[in-house]
Image (tube, rainbow, N blue to C red; front, side):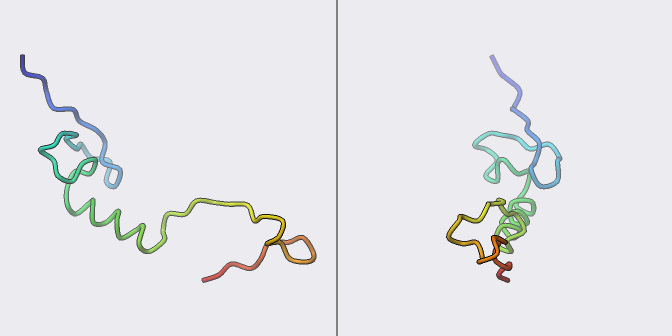
Amino acid sequence: MSSAPRLVRCPRCQGDAVFAPSNRWRPFCSERCHTGDFAAWANEEFRVPVQPSADELQDDGSPPPPVH
């Protein structure tokens, strides 16, 4: 009994990617997509929004200015 490889969407390009040990870049379709996603994380292009805690707020209750 041979089953077809499981295909998933590549998170980077939305193309088909084989989700199996034979694909060393899974869940990505290629090294290019894997590297591009890693670079986006390294450049802080993906961020998780957070609410400032009470001790981080300024005296007027506003959030602190962004740090770049």
